[in-house]
Amino acid sequence: MSLHLRAAVAERGVDLELVLPAGRTLALLGPNGSGKSTALAVLAGLLVPDAGEAVLGERTLLRVEAGGAVRQWVPAHRRRVALLAQDPLLFPHLDVLGNVAFGPRSAGRPRREAEAVARRCLAVVDAADLAGRPARALSGGQAQRVALARALATDPDLLLLDEPLASLDVEVAGAVRQTLGAVLAGRTAIVVTHDVLDVALLADEVAVVQDGRVVEAGPVAEVLPAPRSPFAASLFGLNMGTGTAVASDALRTGQGWVVHGQADPALVPGQSAIAVFRPAAVSVHRQLPSGSPRNVLSGPISALEPQGHLVRVRVGEVRADITPAAVAELALRVGDPVHLAVKAAEVALYPAARG
Amino acid sequence: MPASPPRSRRRRTPASTGVGLPRWLLLPAGVAVLFLALPLVGMLTRVAWADLPALVWSQSSRAALALSLRTSLVATLLCLVLGVPLAMLLARAQFRGQSLVRALALLPLVLPPVVAGIALLQAFGRRGLLGQTLEVAGLQVAFSTTAVVLAQTFVAMPFLVISLEGALRTVGQRYDEVAATLGAGPTTVLRRVTLPLLAPALASGLVLSFARALGEFGATITFAGSLQGVTRTLPLEVYLQRETDPDAAVALSLVLVVVSVLVIAVSRRARSPW
Image 1 (cartoon, each protein chain N blue to C red):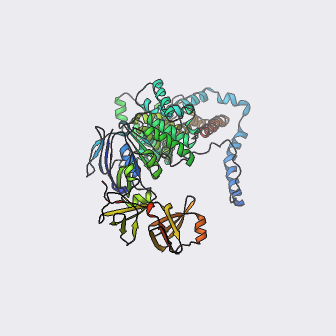
Image 2: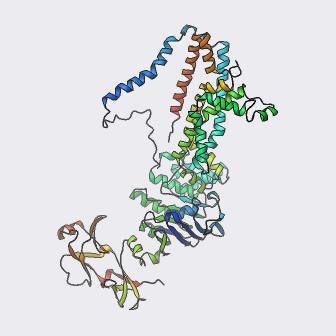
Image 3: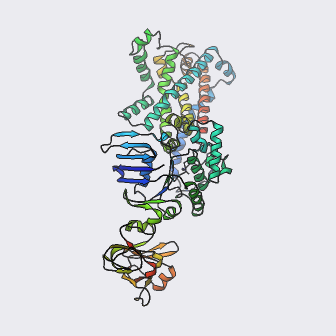
């Protein structure tokens, strides 16, 4: 079922619009406090926006006029919109089966039938063996699987997942992510996340949210490799330069840095263009490097930060990820003048306007 | 998982050395313990153990005990039926005059019981606000067993409301919200999620209300009087016996002490398991 949401919540500085075709999964990507969860709360019926509208399939879930007058409001329990939060929130007074059967029971189905549905849903999330356990005796990953089964058992028209993996250990998150991927296929769903991995593995569409606004949206396959906003690029962990194409394979940034790269065939000199490259593709030098790299940027180091097993060297807006050994060898300190180099083969150049 | 208090009340937690307490605290704390214990010890020394069964089981005592238990149970039931919705409203709703209603709900806690009795008379007595109406309906409330129940309910309800309102705030609304997104309407949420989660607080609130109702004296004697078998509850009986038969008064007091100790034990057991 397709979804169209428009919602403004002044108190949280949120004013955004989302469109989602039926059967697709949308990743809502953005930093904490950017308004992602607010959007979910509005959709789930837990928060009345100051203004907005939500249409799910043929049904108008809510319509609030600009003045705040509520013209249409379907209460949460009649929306057929299930919400899975970061915290699984299993009912502590029920066992696992009771939790998962809660939805079908609330819909008026007899106990036996509801429990059959619950067992099927538990099997879908690989948690069939947990059915008899008390809800309080589960590990984080188990609890999140059960919470997912509980949401699925209501057969929702729209499934909302609010950072479903954030509270899990890395290994557990990986396994639950796989389950999620299988479950979400063909479902209309929204996944809130700040992990670009979730976008790549779970979603068909992505909307990047910054300060309560959608700054970039589109199919994952288009947006992820070629972000149009510096904000999205930094969320995706990419370096990004904007400027004007000065050749079929080069652009000049606002600061006058000329970047060569692998150009999109559609790129025409004189057009606004974008250059994107991975921080790991950037090397750091004390002396101006000679030889192949044609893209060199010089400047003082503004920051040195840990980045996984690597060290992230920042020079202005550009980030380079290098090994701690390299940092030690070069004796890098914040403020030191360095030269960053990136091979043209590592840089993607494309027009700034999509399509 | 939500932070849940560890279920260690019967297990001994390893003694934390912490920063240590100043030793001089022991003195006033010890005085406090003595002050609380001495009256009980005094009473125990004065109990006529040999005559105890006869004293406790005399006709008037039995009547008083039966009346006390009966009225306290009904009052506790009234607290349940009226107090739970009130606590829900105070904790979960937002409306004008809410703080006024909350103050009203807590007033009986701080009001001298005699004053509560006088106030009840002005409302339900023959010449009270509702007295005429009730009389037309063939009901005479004041100085009846009904009055005993009303007095007990009036003073006991705040205990239930307070303990429920606090628990409602602690539990929060997150489970209720999840239940709603799973398709449960407000009544189903209340029945299948809110109340089960509140069960421990509900139990301890009910026990406290029952205890308060059982011990009610001032409001009862003012509003209901002291008629044997009709309004003379156990505390009233104790007070009356004190004049004529001090041994009986002490024996009956012992009964109330035992009941109170049981109440404390039950309410401690009923503490939140999650």
